[in-house]
Image (tube, rainbow, N blue to C red):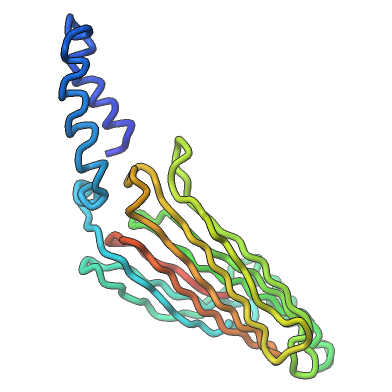
Length: 254
């Protein structure tokens, strides 16, 4: 039940709104501070989950490694929290990248095919990494993204760049998920065989489903390794302080 609905019911049901009780003891009586306003449904998120017909689950850590996909494609995987509160991993899939990424990949592929081996090696490569946590209603709660560009020469990473961004789902009245402690590091000061980049983002939650701010928290980590031969690997993990049946983690590289 949303806070607006709960407030409306409490308003409609309060005897203090009509009659002499307005100035009487009912103003400070137990009806105003009783379970309807501060009961388990708001104070205990686990009970709130049960009231919504679902099941709260304990803390879990999810980790997975993925290879970089070929040009114009993305590699992805989905892991879902089942009715048994256990993480159920889906298959690793290689699928077409979103249209904008696929066009870039096809163009790069054509340019590399038409160029000499030396020119192809010098063509900057790009990689997009994502780690996204969805709730049981398929709402994106939190996400960590990193975008990488690198060039190679003589079997080495000659130049590389990385950018980190996040997503946090907000709720009305300045509530919902909040990103904090967002960091990114790595790379090489000079040409190197591999360039490793790490990123991390922590997320806290205070809102409709937990007014305390102490129940839900997500921490996303990613590690991307770029190599001098143009290949790459992605590792993603997410730590969840309490979960919920039907939550699912989508991660991948494109």
